[in-house]
Amino acid sequence: MGWCEAAAGEPEAEAHAVLRHLVDLYSLALRLHMRDCDLEPEPVGRADDAAWRAVFERCAALPFSCYASVFDPRSVRTGAAELDMGDLADDLADIYRDLTSGLSLYRAGHRETAEWDWCVSFRNHWGRHATGALRALHCWAADEAAW
Image 1 (tube, one colour):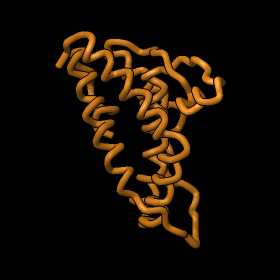
Image 2: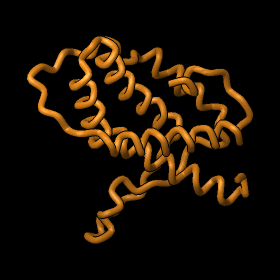
Image 3: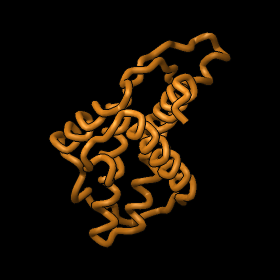
């Protein structure tokens, strides 16, 4: 959450910071365990539209925003692959929103439900945003020799 709420720096440094954070988040998400929760309290602190917009605008410090993508890479087998456009700002703002939902549950003492929320949102939503952003940022760093 720190990067999303910090002042922007130089584009290259920002891109490297995002790469590191996304790799860490993805790795942590892979360690989550789906739990059956008897109670699913309503999220008490999901990021609102203004918070989402602030993160989206924070991403202007990155060296690029839009990138080419395929929504489901497995669709190549069936010939149904459709080229899509990804957006780093949208990726990062959506990830932020999904993570803050679970974080609010965790802080309210609903730890198992927070883990369940993070797991479900990772599998169904923000994991795709993270992997798209990782690939785009990796390609940028490799092509720009920005290592």
